[in-house]
Every structure is written in C-alpha cells, then in structure tokens.
Length: 357
Ligand code: C5P
Image (cartoon, rainbow, N blue to C red; front, side, top):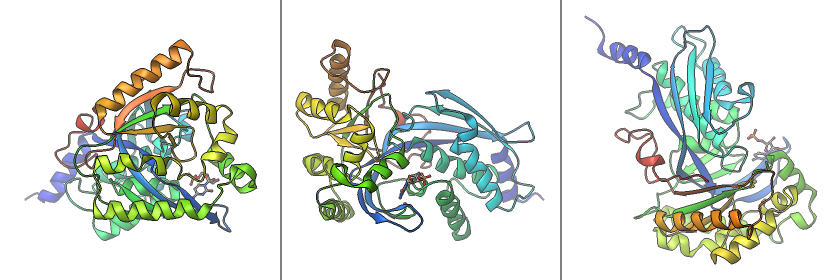
C-alpha cells in the first residue's frame, strides 16, 4: 500500500507552490556600529505590508532552474535573489534526487531597490517554495527543527534582510539581520501606509558608506534611535493598536539612523520629504536605506486619499520628486495576517489594498 505522506508529497510536487512575498517597512532603524566583517549591527523593528510580490514555483521541464518576471522591472535574472535562493537551498538539502529543477514565475509589485526589501522577500518565499516543492516543508504545519535551522541558515546566506521574512509578522531584527524576534501584530484595524518611492535607486552599500564617513549624514544622537527602537519593541510585545501606532509616527519617522545618509545619496529626497510633511500634515519616515518615504494612517481609506492627493501634486508640479520618471505612489496597509497562512488564499486578501501610480 502507498505511504500516504509520500503520496501527499508527490502530489504537492506536481502542483505549483504559490507564495506571497510581502514588502517590509522599518518602523525604527538604529545602526549600532560597524563590525569587523564590514556589516553593521542593527536594532530595527520591522513590519510586513499587505503590498506583496507573488511567487509561483513548479517543477521545471529544463535541466536547470528558470525564472520569468512579470510586472515591475526587477533587473537581470542572473542577479535575481530567487535563483540564488533556489541554488543555496539545493546545496543545503544536499543536492538530493528530490531537489528537482524549478520553474518560477514572479509577479513583481514591490518597487525595486527601494528600501522595501522586495528582492529579499522574494528570496525568503523562494526558499520555502523550494523546500515545499521538494517535500521538505509541510505548508500546513510548523517546520521540524532541522528544516527550520536549514532555512534560517540559507536565508542569512542570501542576504541580511531575508531572515526577517521567515518570521511572517512584525519582528525585532538585530545583529546583521539574522537575529529575529517575533513581536505581536498590531491589534484591530490594520494601519494604512502611503509609500512614495522616487524613481532613483539608493544602493544600500552606498548609503552605509556615507553613514560610516560621518559628518552631517550621521545621526545627532545614535543612542536616541536605539532607545526609540527598544521602546517600540517593548510596546509591540505587549500589544499595540493602530491608533497608538499612528500616534507614535512622529517619533518613529525620525528613528532611522540611515535617513540622513540616504538623503545625501539621493539628491532631492530631503526636499520631497519636507514637501510631503507640509502637504499631508503628517510625519514622513524613510524605510531602510531609502529612498521610499512612508506615512502612517489610521485606515486604508485614509492612505488611499493621501495617495490620490500626492498623485495630483506630482501631476500639477506642486510636488517634485528626484529621478528621471514620476515616483511610485502606493497606498497599502500593514499586513493583517501571515501572508501564507493556511486558508489565506495567496494573491487575494493580503495584497488587496495596493494601488499603484
Ligand atoms: O546582506 P546584503 O547583501 O543585503 O547587504 C547589502 C549591503 O548592505 C552589504 O554589502 C553592506 O554594505 C550593507 N549592510 C550592512 N550591514 C547590514 C546589512 C547590510 O553594512 N546589517
């Protein structure tokens, strides 16, 4: 008689695995110092957003892994972290016969090189999709300790922002990015988020290099960002609702140690940030190493209205954004639930509220 577990695993291998890969926002980002390996010690409260890429993975007909990208331009496939994640995951599982070549299709909705960690999130989704396709991960249950350790190690190997996405919820991120402590979700209504991403990249190494060089791009009191970050992590652990989070937006918007360096790398970012603050009457933060600017709202509808207003401002020239093309303007929310929870149909509720301009 056939082994039911093996039969289920085989059936899974024949059906494409679909994973949502959410964007992230750094609500705080304290840079604690430069390490001997060149990376920086961080203390950051990160939250996943409803805005998400969608990754679909099936068995490939070809002898090697393949990737097709639709939607936003994600750059050359050879540099795509999805293929890198497949390759490293295959090495980690020991190149077994089960680890068949994979064909991936990525619907790219998260702006690229924007401080939203879209590429890292795609990589985290790719690690899990590969493990699922190879029968090493049961999507309905928690991974066994060996698989959990393997995916964490592969995630760190792919990039500093990747381990955060394995937590599938708000988390305190420390070390280089590999120490991830899950925090509670925001209670009640998901806060709305307006994202304004100028069409100009702020490469993370360049932003860290400006930060390291010191001068005006360094924060005035690095300890204060850390205190804000620690305080928010404590509050989130205890449970915080949308209104309380939005009430803290002013403090959080100034709690990114890389913001000034990002404004040095991207000429015109500081001006756009000030203009948005004046126009919207709300604090405007920078996500990660930028250049995405974020504004928190009590609801998705309020973020939608703000996005429409910013679009008008860009169209009529009263708002000027750096870059050769108009900025991407997206209204979304903080993620309401883990994006790939059983019963949470990929591609529906979790991505529901993204509108692009
Ligand atoms: O790990 P990842 O490849 O995403 O990092 C990209 C670059 O960002 C690194 O080469 C480094 O310059 C910088 N970085 C850093 N400290 C971190 C994370 C990233 O200096 N904790």
